[in-house]
Image 1 (cartoon, rainbow, N blue to C red):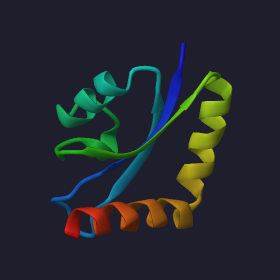
Image 2: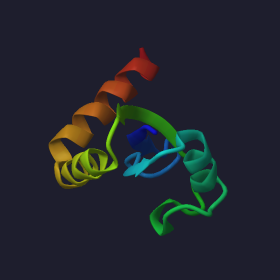
Image 3: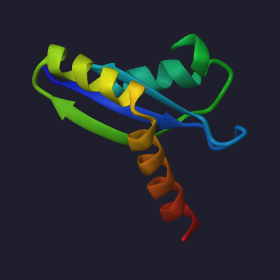
Image 4: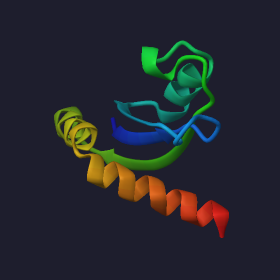
Length: 88
């Protein structure tokens, strides 16, 4: 079974907030976030996946998720790269 670390963005929100998470079923998890049944922070917003990476191990995925949540520099770089691609 594969595990994913992902970053979501809300394009309608102020400053386009991002959310980092991990899951074994990416499409199901995105659906839960968009129907207000996901994490509390994501409720009431529409989210789009801007980054995903697949891992063979749940423990490795959770470690990477922790690093992504704590490292704002990486998140901001991914976010700005995505925003630049949709603007251009």
